[in-house]
Amino acid sequence: MIPLKVKCLNGAQKQIDMSTLKRVAKGVSQIHPGWSSTLTFSEELSAFVELSGAPPDIKGNSEGASNEVDDAYAKHVYGKTRQDVP
Image 1 (cartoon, rainbow, N blue to C red):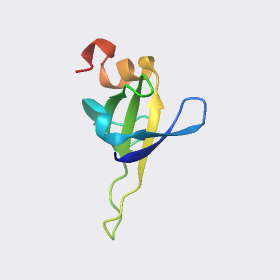
Image 2: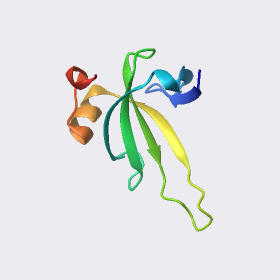
Image 3: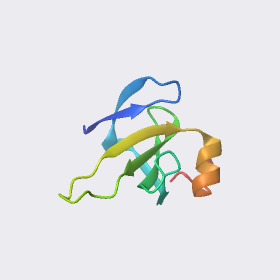
Image 4: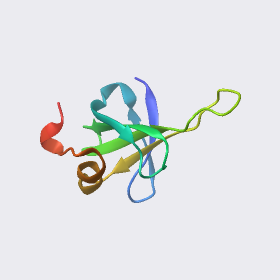
C-alpha cells in the first residue's frame, strides 16, 4: 500500500492507496494553474482524483497536490468521463 492523502470535494482529507488508482489522462491542472497533472480514478472513493505537481523551483523542489474532482471537471478539463476509466 502506498498511502496518499486526498482533499475531497467537501474539504475533508481521506487517505487512499495510491497504487490502486487508475490513470485516465495527463494534462494541466485548473485547480493549480500551470501545474502538470494526471487525472486518475479511485475505486475507493468512486471518484476522479487529480494528481498535480508544481514546476520545480531553483533547487529542484516541487510541491504536489491530490484533489478529488467532480465528473464535470474531468469532462471540461480532460475531456474524459467514467466510460473512459480503464
